[in-house]
Length: 144
Length: 144
DNA sequence: AAAAGGTTGATGCAATTGCATTAAAATAGA
DNA sequence: TCTATTTTAATGCAATTGCATCAACCTTTT
Image (cartoon, rainbow over the protein chains, first blue to last red):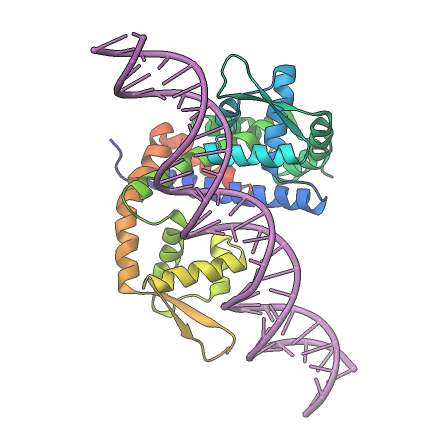
């Protein structure tokens, strides 16, 4: 069922690993240089902003971000402590909670995007033609 | 010079991030399930094995693996402590050292590959046609 | 040759991640 | 119902990573 990867598969895997590291390093470096928090904060804030008033359950966010449960729990701690997110009780399930973004959270998310967007362009967009970007996105989609 | 990414660029970036996480998680999980060390150990051992007798300077390995200097220094500590790698002095530069793989290191590398190879095939090869793998590798290469 | 600057590698300390476990509540099954 | 199982979320502790800095040595400049 599995077997050995052929040469192209191995090259694709290595490329995936290296490309992601290079791109991520460059993007994270720009955020840091701008005095902004890491990408994981952005991802969480963005999901919560898209979720709107209702917010999201931690386990939903966890799946959306492909985070480990304990990592999400602690990311939520930090976001809450920074005033970017609120934890509120959910009456339907007394174990659970609802995470919602605060105005400060929306504001930070927006400021991060101002750095993040050009960083994506620099790390990815500038290196690919429009057609290549479409193809790459489609191929990567097959791996998920 | 930078500006905002278009839709395809953003999709490619998100896909890159997610595909890498999914593939890596699946591969690391298989290594762990087999009681083997993480991928970073494999990568280091493989580079050192390819380097042969002469070995590599830490800074060379650091660049080959895209590691931070302090992380490589500590990875070398662990590999050495596990008897997989040897640090030896280099006479041409008394600051430096040479890292070489030991027989135990070669053995572990080989045993890891027995798990790693099918894991790559499962996470990447099985999800792409041969042509797609070639295309993907080429596009990812443009990002590095 | 001496000083200034750059390279190589390690390390103390803080923050984050991983692992294992736990507590509490919901759901399923007898 | 009431017991067993599953789901949701947190947390103590160990390992790893990140940050800042340092020490030693090499190289270049004057």
